[in-house]
Length: 254
Ligand code: MG
Image (tube, rainbow, N blue to C red):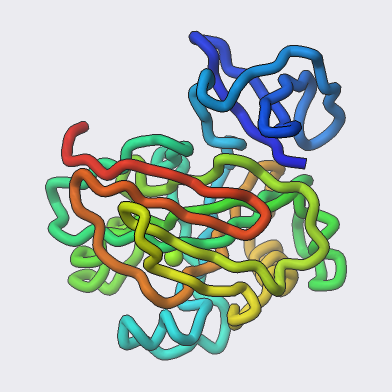
């Protein structure tokens, strides 16, 4: 099932995708919902982020080839950082190029959406806490990251956390999904989650033993090799197998 949030006029709604159309649902994604007969075409709605997380936990250097392309070692434990939820952006949203940066990169990632309160869980139990998965673009001001050696400022600008358009709730494992990015329609990254160093159940367990995860929280699992630069006017897309494509527009305008 593909879950989404969207707006028609000023009203925020939730829906599921059925045969290429949106059917409105009532209730919550995390508990019970009912599917109504209210139907919308995809091109008549404004997409919203499919959930509003209390936090976005990101994994750095989780693919060996990507660690190498930026001249980094592969970490011996997951390297985690947070993006603030003020950075949240939706499918079709504008990525605003900050004045402080001259080098903004895309990073295509598989993101996990948490279903229920998750604290101190084991690797074996971890997937019980997953609502589904989605596409994530870990937008990064690479020049600032390189200059500071830190992640927070470089990755936290407003609009730097696009995800969506849907949460796919049908999954068995996350160990063989392609993760791709395109800039202006041209393929730039073509990775597969089988190459992740730390796998999804391990990441959930690891993080939940540090911080409690809440329904809707996001874990962005790292990017494969092939990251690169975005320019104002570019169209960037992230595709994760089973979800679809997350599309965003890069702009210097606010
Ligand atoms: Mg990343």
